[in-house]
Amino acid sequence: MNNSTWILLKTQFLNQSGVNTFRYEKDKKKKNKVVIFAIAMAITVLMMAVYCFMLAYGLGRIGLTAIIPGYAFTITSVIVMLFTLFKASGTLFAFKDYDMLMALPVQTTTVITSRFLLMYGENVLFSILVMLPMGIAYCLFVHPQILFYVIWFISMFVTPLVPMTIAAVLGAIISAISSRFKHTNMVNIILSFVLTIGFMGVSMSAGTMSGGQINIKQIASLGVMLSHKMNQIYPLVSIFEKAICNYNIIAFISFILISLIWYYVFVKIVSVKYKAINTGLTTYQTKSNYKLQSLKVNSPFMALHRKEMKRFFSSYLYVLNMGMGAVLLLIVSITCFILGVDKLQQLMGMSNIKPIMINFVPFVMSGMLAMTCTGAVSLSLEGKNLWILKSAPIEAATIYRSKMSVNATILLPISLLSSLFMSLCLKSTIMHIVWMFVTPLAYVALTCVWGIFINLKMPNFEWESEVTVIKQSMASVLGILGGMLFGFIPMVILFILPGVDRNLIMGVITLAVIGFTSFLYMKVCGTKLP
Image (cartoon, rainbow, N blue to C red):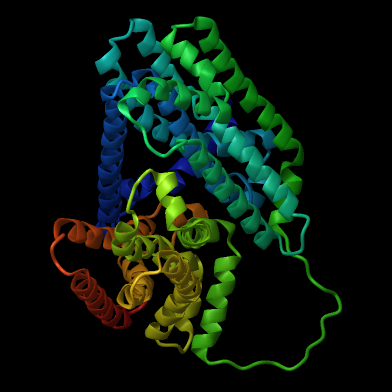
């Protein structure tokens, strides 16, 4: 790593991590927000690590110890690939300070390397988070040689390279294709959604079991089948398993060389078209035959609503990260409608699944809708332009309502369509159909208000990249996870109260959500702009 790469990498890290805020900020409230965010992230990381350990430990308990290394490797690769695909645009391509960086006396490869290494550092954390606890669980059952620990430790840092470059190449291809169209951003968004959902579909289909059920006699062959399927999806798993399970040094060296060479080739190829791709993504087409015609006059609310809608769809990262939950819900509901309950029972290996779906689906739908919480970052995305809203003769409540309305415009049609498909799939009673529509709609209202409430409590207007606000801010995390938690808690209540009438529980929970939403709405509308 040359000096220029290190300087760029250090600068980007300090700008995005909040380290400088903690070190030099005199406002205690801002410093406390950084501390709270760090604590929340530490708790989340601990929970994920425990989950990964328990997953590997469970595999070991049922006699599938041999597939733990390949499983850990595959899970890490999938997580890294998805996160890199989401962050490629905004971190590697079309980032805010692109013009400033390209004007510096540094090579294009230096800029690419510094941006890539920033993502690599984040993805190494994911790799350690998954592979370390799963490796510990593996050791409890196998008691491997010392060489295993050396290979496993090095692999935690090498494993992210190939999936990162694959995702970055896909991101580059998507960006290159979309940059040739007039509506670059919309093409970029559509291609990314199709690719992400397709990738998730392939991963899920590869994990399904023929026949739907597993008995004790099948467990012996289950490990071989899972290993074979993982190798089909990602051939590098086979080389990794040989290195880990057989202590094969040649396979381990091959794994490292493939990862490093793949990365080197990626940087060299992308550097050739890097400027062209970014230029295409950051420029806009205009017409030379513009003629002034009739002008439309709207109310302040409608003008702000249109502005917010354009802002949402103008950001690839904004749409992809905040819209994925709602899009997945619509796809899942359509899939359930097409397959029907009988086919779902066969695929999931569960008999009499219909009553379970009737009780829990409204809250599963609500949780997935709550993942699309645009309000959690909409205020922060105003950035340094917030003064324009402050100086306009518009009430703060009107600004908040316009941002809530964008969230509602996105979620309402998806909620209604998903409820319709799921109702047609389950063919339940009238009351169950009513809750299938009413409960998700109540959560849509909660999501709209909750997002603005959280963003008012934790705004961030001093950012250099949208990635900082959309993916790394505490408001974004709480906006999404908080809404999902609101959907999860009622499912726990339904589970621990099996004897209570389901319609009564549904009614009480829905009314509680409406009441809580009303309380938050009054709090929000009475708050001044930060």
